[in-house]
Length: 341
Image: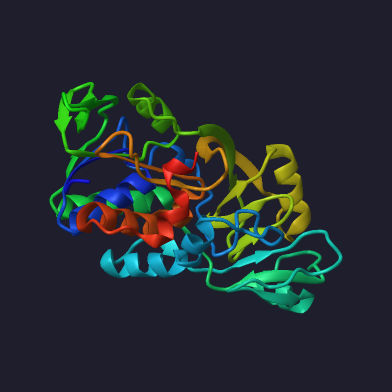
């Protein structure tokens, strides 16, 4: 790897890589076809949790488990570096329709109905048990991405927005030389592909297979009474949180079922109405785990693509920057390497 780095993709992962690498002293160029965080980052529910993506009922294992365990600490660290980072540490409350409570995992506590009623007072029928994760938070994913890009600029990064990348360039020896864009070439001895689902198409002409498929992720914006929800609420019907005084966002499958579930779950929710629906396309690696690391067959090429990108961005960006700038091999990324496929 070289300290002369082009990062392709200004979603939250690419922005984090650019910020951390520039802060560590690399010469960084960040390029994106749109605006910071305007792609799938904007469509993320943006829950920062130590648990797996399935909330209360899922057990998250595999390479990302260690990364996820550091997620909240890494965001707190980032908040110190970038004061005013838009992160809300509200905690999360999760429950299912199962009769028996699961075992609490690190950072979680099993709570009873009375405690649920205290934590979320508008719940009509508090469940007999729920999983309370007080350290969990949620982020303004676009706001955080914009702050990361601004931070990268402060540390000398060159940022090219609204500039589609058309190809990755190689020199006559087969080494990475930068990228071709709609506005002309950008030089760099290392290229980090952090372009979400577009990563596979950019890598393919180099003979590199990145097994990432598009996975739809509906996100609903709702008008709701102020204070209807205090923290992140995760049930079998929805992931739900308040994002403004009279606004909720929900990650679920159906707007009609989501509206019905919200109205039946919370007192005072009869006036909740759907404002908009966005269907994002998140990058889903074939085995569900992040694909992060150098590509041995193409010297200078580095891949960074993952599900749960918002949760992992602060941690992964710092680790990738250490590998790029200091030449370390980060053990926390050892199970995420592209060579496993």
